[in-house]
Image (cartoon, rainbow, N blue to C red):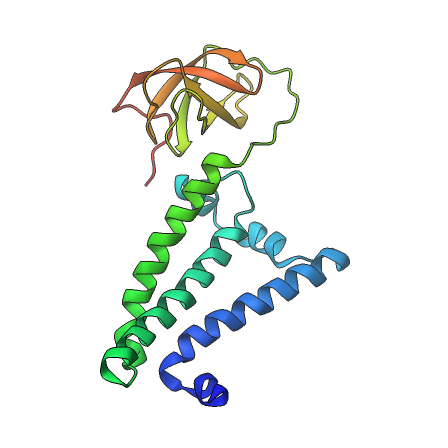
Length: 203
């Protein structure tokens, strides 16, 4: 029965997703000790537009996004196929299920990274650069009092920085342009200055 499950052709895309997850985990573990991790290689070969995409500007490792996608894709595929099997006593062809499974996987992956990005405490490095009074753009999530969001800002030397910002009141929405008015322990306090003008434009 177990071998029949693993050899079922209509479950093969989801088996492959689980296999990729296992291989990636093994490669990351081994690569950690030999200083050749796949995640480091992906960072080097990733295009610039992908590195600065607001959808992956998170406080944790970006390889985790791909891991979550693999987990959710395999889970969604198994769930859909088992649901179909329970009602029809047979599995649907894999090409009918793969697109709905991928849509479900993307939806739950976006939900998971948004939730994690809100609760994980950001890491900060000491800096003597004064960013007060500079313009920034919210690059990850929405900020409200007590819950910071990531923003990108260019300093006086032209260097790009990613910082955490919170509003005094109200909410700072994703991609809104703000001005930094003061620094408060671990984050900047910012005010929205325009809803339609951005420092960075995504092509």
